[in-house]
Every structure is written in structure tokens, then in C-alpha cells.
Length: 79
Image 1 (tube, rainbow, N blue to C red):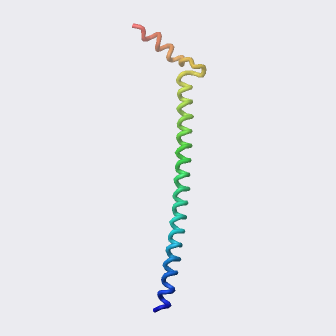
Image 2 (tube, helix red, strand yellow):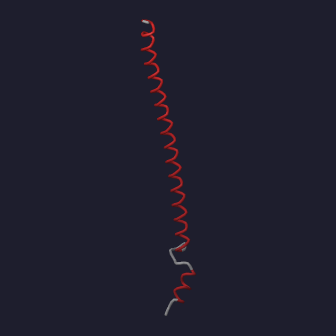
């Protein structure tokens, strides 16, 4: 029985260390996944922003002038 107790304590400590190491690895893996998700979200936001800027630029014209259709509407709305 004495040998079983002397082997049991280091075994429990070793298992605890392996468990902690596994948790640390899982934490690192989760952090990498979160970083990748954040990067993907940032890219999606940047692309959406570029598309919105392009749409706004197209809507107001390249020189800040209203589109030609807007001039026609201004003339036809006089009452």
C-alpha cells in the first residue's frame, strides 16, 4: 500500500499538469479563432465601407455634381 500512495501523488500531479497544459493549448486555439473571426469581420466592414463610398460617389457624381437625372427632376417639380 505504501508504494501505491507514493506513486499516486506524483501521478495525480502529472495528470493535473497535463490537464493545465491542455487547457492552455485550448485557450490559445480559441484565441486564434477569435482573432481570425475579428480579422474576417474587419475585412467585411472595410469592403462594405468601400462599396458604400463608391455608391455615394456614384450617386452624387464624380465631381460632386448631382446626377443628370436629378436635374430633370428639379425642373419637373415646379408647381
